[in-house]
Image (cartoon, rainbow, N blue to C red):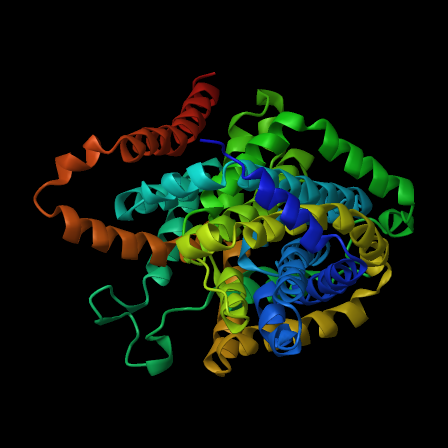
Length: 504
């Protein structure tokens, strides 16, 4: 049986190649990039806001417009992560690890170029594979149940062991993050760690934590400088050649880009995993497979870390879309709103959509693939202006970022406790910096804690008293071994090096 329905493919091309569709895609990319680059906002919010605008459009026009907002939002979230250490969405957390240090070093144009081309390649690669392997990918998703999701999230958490610094402090910070991530209602509906505060029954939202730990806390240190960059020499670096050089760096890292895009695609296929887990796993793998002399530069402005994070982030978009189209299961909030858009226009994502409307299914995938090419031109336009953020004095930048960060935290649920939590996390981050605890460790624990908790509870219910049967599941067994290796080998290396130094 052929993997591709060529008759449906021909019809799909005729559906999407028109001036009208092109204009809708360009408009969607603009909206997505702008909203994605505003702290606390995201592509999913943009899709929700623009959904009423599409009521009188043709289904394919509406879906292309809204999916372009999705694509633009994914890229836009990485821009502020690079320039301001403020992830536009949780999926851009890994982007801050090397993107912002590059900006501090005056290499912001290079970083923006790397981020743009990595996002484009991840998008193109992801949707190309989805187009070719749409049917087999559906079977792959069915093999992932609670045990696999649990171990996959633990695998993503293993990046904690690669963070530079005191391993004891790193593990403590990660453990505290995991505890914070379990605040809220348990899988059995009982409150935990809420202290009677009703607004905490749904847990701690990620956006207030991001805004507090990364954005607001960084502003306290920006007060001491005239500009974002460490040296005022970096302020004058506005050369467009730097952006092109960054794009060239990303293109040359073929193995890293392909590996990260694949990781992004396959993790994006899994409901509840998404871009955050994908980018963290890819970042960890980029560090693991890097040369020994380059490992210490991760987290200090290594382009390889930025390439991995952005490629996986965009690659996961294709996986999320494939799961929604084939099973009717949204892989994230943006995919959930997109699914609602399908239904508004009389289409229900799932097996029947693929069976009865294969031409439309292919049209969505092909249209999203070509969005990647348009993103290059539109992204370059935005990159040129975003790169000038370093020219803005911090006395003007700090109040602007503060307002947007607090508004972004408030906009998620519309309750004031999220603003209070943002400020509380900012204080925690300041204390952690003072005591030399890694902020990223507590953030990773918080992001992944609730997922680990929920999948662990489901695994216990399914396999109570029969835990050895888990190792009869090949994916679970393989990922367990990989997680143990990734988690403990770096820690052992650190202790071994420390003992070797003390002995000499």
